[in-house]
Length: 201
Image: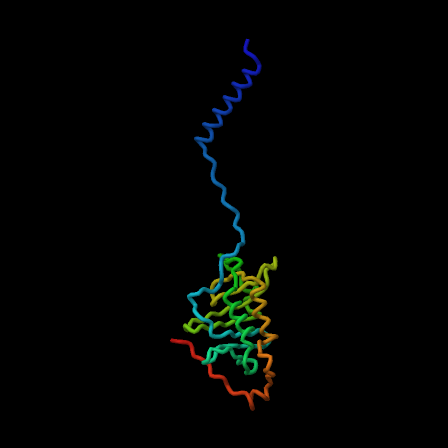
């Protein structure tokens, strides 16, 4: 008489053989990974060269522009002319290069759904090489991971909130030197117009 344990072993063996042939004839399909919104590098690259100017303006008419003069010194040309705090201007330059892509939207959303039909803020960046870029800033994402940004009128990215906010702060706090007290009257009477370096062709 065959022992019960022997029948159990034979049954397990039969199931194993059956499973082997089932898997062999019908292999499992690999599952596709769920896409995640991870950092994809920086918006601007070293190929753009040395930053020459930063111009930021918004829907309300606020406007600030800083750029290098012929002596490679950062000066402010709007809202009023004056010498810039070189440390603060340098920090803004660094921030431009550190604009981080949170994600790129492969299927662009409707512009009015992300605030890009009439962008709240616009950044125009000029480089010594003659290259220029335009960044139109829309709404913040629902998860507050960043802002929707249209790059040169084409691709829409989500750019890190901290990077954009640091640059938009220049609208309300232009980086004037501590020795500068800019005013409209002073600009027209006492402040000489700085010589601005023209981008190379």
